[in-house]
Amino acid sequence: MKFSKRCRLLVKLVVLAVTVMQLKVCLAAVPSLQVRGVDLVDDHGNTVILHGMSTHGMQWFGNFATPGAFQYLKGRGANLIRLAMYTGEGGYIANPALKNTVFAAADAALQQNLYVIIDWHILQDGNPQLYKQQAKHFFAEAAGRYGNNPGVIYEICNEPNGNVSWQRDIKPYAEEVIPVIRTAAPHSVVLVGTPTWSQDVDVAAADPLSFANVMYVCHFYAGTHGQDLRDKIDAARSKGVGVFISEWGTSRADGSNGVFLDNAAQWLDFLAQRQMSWANWSLCDKNESSAALLPGTGTNGNWTDESLSPSGRFVFSKF
Image 1 (tube, one colour):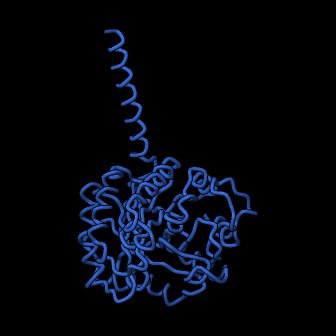
Image 2: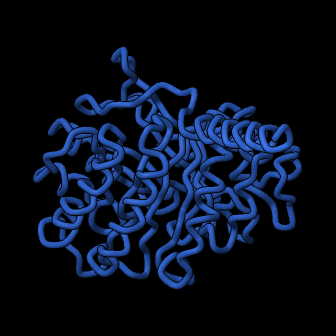
């Protein structure tokens, strides 16, 4: 009987330890966020500006989403990581187990008190309606896992593109997916992509969603996009909606050429003046100019300036 009691006590202690670990993941030590007008704010109404990195596709470069990498970013002054879970191109649709890599990375980032964007990264699939049912299933699981965590933000369609319209395709998609998230995460911030690779924020702002705590996504690349896109952002904000730059690069839009640091600095000044949040593409060592790390760089975050690409050195100095 004594041995049996000890066994029961041991089991209880193990269960308690697991529960405590889960609570640590569940409750990040970061302020909860709200969208108030054009701004992201905390519970006291203070404007919050998020700035950090986006991973490249987690199916290719998920090995850079490590505790060491997140600790490094935090030490440089970042407060955000975006986890780009491609849907197509060998991503979640072909391999749903990729979600486990994303969730493990999210857990590690939350432990560093980074905000985390879980990104349903449509690209070649173009229209978010194509995998809408899979999106609803995924976000039900993700929100169920992180619903009480103020550090998690949900990006429900990265870059709608092709023959896709806001009114016919994207807005109806969002009107189905957001309630799935709200069931488990009623107050979390949701980011919604916009037409033309998330550039037509003005179109979305003219016909906004009715949900609270929603921001509209705009993406830019310093070697491709300039004043015309900045004007669209201002037009959207003039209608009272929040715009979130969940992806931008120092290169051209295809990730190559450049880097265009003067243009990038102009963009960052524009965002700073408007207290807008951003995530830079991308935290990886891919042989392209938008990558933050040089090819062959290790994944553990023990990086020197010599490990960083010209883009990485510029961006990491701006956190």
